[in-house]
Image 1 (tube, rainbow over the protein chains, first blue to last red):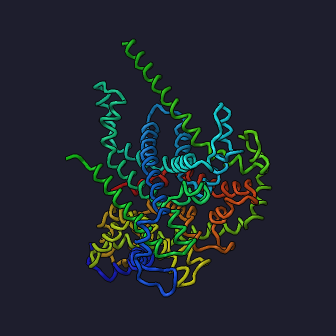
Image 2 (cartoon, one colour):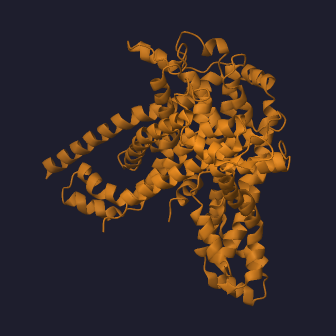
Length: 286
Length: 282
């Protein structure tokens, strides 16, 4: 490594300028903004209308409740599914592996708008193919967009469809780094595949699973496009309103930048706390 | 001996059946939305909203595309999306490669601080910066509906710095020193020696960045409201939720946004996977 500060900053500065202007400065600025009353010029210091409002705003608590509900239900289901998919996709017994991989990994490249549109049509209460199939087996049709619980289930299914494969890719790469002879030895000792999974695979995958959980938590805290587009701005009646959507409405519909910044910092703080909690729970037991 | 082999084959067959009993239905469920996207894009609205189950593609793709083009100038927005994604990818790869190179090759004052700040803020939610970015770009500089607004702010992404830093650090540093002794300038060592060696990483990084830009929804939604400057996802999203638009048209747009990426995904699967998993490597 060469001691060359000038040359180094020559290479660094183009990126650093963008990084400082559009990442570091906004991080600091939005913290400052979260204490300002921004609905009238000039903006004035008034935390009572931002943080003070936040702690007693029923709409905020509704969005918080919905987001935490999605977090608690969707993330564990999706991660468990992703582990299952990764292990089964890794099996040498699997036929048509290319098609299988395509089926689960393809959603990774599908944009939010495109998949939101398909899910809206598929789950349409009157003409949607899902309700036709449900009625076809003799069950009553579900009002996916007017029943609060069904709408929430729809969001959870959509997000799971979109992201399970993404996590499976990461977990699969972890699986492939486990040396084969570990399993060969276990098989020689007549350890069943199920036991191999719980006593070898799962413990070795723990750091990667924790990583996936942290990524998913951060993603869920910012969930926006799905309730915005699929359930029509968090409907019915705010039943699928998430923190991300609440921030969008406060920041860019009402243009209440100060209050929206307080929401943004709450999202960030929650994401950090929940991530640290996961890291702590998933730490190596030494 | 023979009996043992026989029972082992039987176990194997039983496991294989069980495996496919789980995987085949799951794969069908997972492929179903993509299949329906294609089916919807080829059906007239009367077919999409008909009482019968329609699972087979029809022949209305071109008509649907015309309807979409009438609802929103989709070809124009598709061009915008391609243009923004290409320029963004090239610029981001350039900026982050140079930064990653500096962090590997030189010892300098502030090196630890730069790296520390990048790593410490890596997992902060994007929502923390989106409001100030919007105030700066749209209000203070009045740059709404410009290429600069669409391309430059998202360049803050530090993913490339970490990718490229990792890639450069795995190269034999003696090689660079030898070139330096030969009198080759640092810039040339970077562009002629290091960058060509980093080609696989650059490929993986480019795919991930292109995809991120192609599918980016929130930021273009905020800064591109003029129909001639909208990206394709924003234009398509603006139709969702309205009754007097062609749903077949929307699905045609969804197919045009998705299928090219699926083709890229299949063709460059290896680079894709390494792009996604590189983030997971400590």
